[in-house]
Amino acid sequence: MLQLELFEKAYTDQYQEHGLLYEMPQVGDVTFLNGMNEPVHRWFRLTPSYAPELVRHLVEALECDSKTFICEPFLGKGTTIIELKKLGLHGIGIELNPLLKLASEYALTWEVNVNSFAQFVAETNQTLSTLLRQCQAMSLEQALSEYDLALPTIHDVFRWWKPDVLKDLLLIKNVSGQIENQKYKKLYWLALCSAALDCANVHRNHPTISFDDDHTRQIDVLAEFSGKLAQIVQDLQTLPARSTWGEVSCVNGDSTRLAEFVDEKIDRVITSPPYPNRFSYVHTTRPQLFFMDVIQEASKSAEIDLAAIGGTWGKATSVLYDGIIEPHANIANALDAVIQELRPKSNLMCNYAIKYFNMMDDHIRELKTRASRKFRGAYVVGNSRLSGVEILTEVILAKSFESNGFKVDKILVLRKRGGKKKLFETVICVSANHRFS
Image (cartoon, rainbow, N blue to C red; front, side):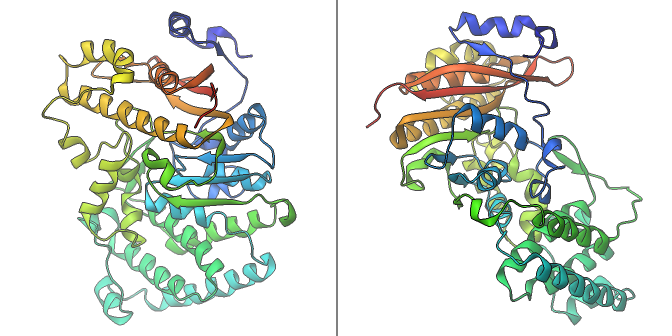
């Protein structure tokens, strides 16, 4: 057990006030950094994701086995679904962001002959090296014409990538797009998708990205790309035996309409939904969404964020300035204190918080229609502060679960985050309270 002094006792005391049990398990580093050192998980970086070690801990705690159907309704970069496949378990992941869905799906492409793929990578690297050297003296405009390339349609493209860097990325993209072996092509997609952001003019903050307009970095595009491929080759060699792999799948969908995407009864959920912290998954993947041709128009990224739980970029924010959003009746009491304190300070932030919890309530309501009689779930969430008002995410969501017929078993307090701020990472552990129809 973690020592209580690592946390602020005043924070955990509020669980007793709300009738919630809590524990402080020793799990280790639960952040994305842990995953960047593990095979397959390191193929794609998403800073708000959690650690594979935490997934393994929850799989054991929830007593998952080969007969258990597990759902990950907020798939992200696929940490949970990758671990399920490694552990021989059965499950499905749902992700609203189409780029993240593809990244998760392609990270499950393990059915390749590793030696043959390694040979293909070596030969292709040589081809790319020759091509980039031949085109070194070309301007970007000349390369676009000569090789029939197209610039990403993202606004202000040259703020995202320097012309010479973009030229090399597009040449690599052109060659990768012509790969006939579809499994190889998916793995190349992953390497290029990661390299495209690593080579961009950005700071990779936590959890956001920001422009790095005046950087003097010397960017070797081929080295970045080939390094990603080398990781993939290395990791494929470390996978468990194919006969032990679990059966998993990924779908592009909205978790607030869960029943549209999941036919089976759900026995377990292991997930980490967005936190109410005004972070946008669309914003941090926006350059890749455009570079990889997942979307072509800015309006599409706005639509995705508008539909996302906690979406807060562009239109998703602008629609919240005016009017009053009311909480769902079943969670009104749980949100009353927040609304009373937050509304006078910022109508925008109050509407944002209510929209977030209403959409999570929509998801929980949908989950009830698919939860089996033996259902158990683990939701990794973090609290936040909006306009100086503390948002006790795990407490409010616990009340939402209870109002929808679930039993809240306990809260696991994982870590304190955010320096001096009272920000915590927790897990809401829930189970079926009765037979769901």
